[in-house]
Length: 155
Image (cartoon, rainbow, N blue to C red):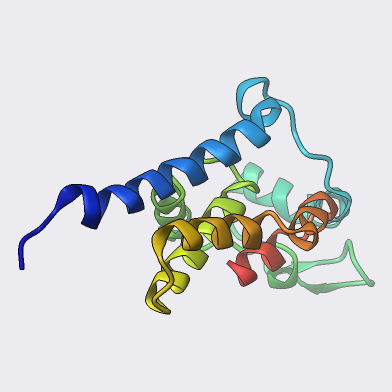
């Protein structure tokens, strides 16, 4: 079996480049102009996690309890970071450096593309299916609402 670049690898590379370009062009104000997506749930989270985030920034220690919500609750429900956690670095590599939260849409396209290929779908149809999966209305509404974990869960 001989390797044919044009047949064996080129469609997949073009698909990944197309996924990247679609996300970059669709969210160009965020990438090129520094604009942000107003996400209501993220804004509420920032308010509830303020005490935890301020303590971490000022002391470098992880706060394990906060009195800022519900008269007191464990802080790991709000914001918890572990030293030596490489998850964000791995995500940055897998999503080719796209910023959060739009990197989840790219990763969703990539994951659906691989899944469709594993089902035996031809690459051109797998590319279309991956784009349709990631840019469906539910994902875009979830992105606007700030349900970033939900998008990553689907991805």
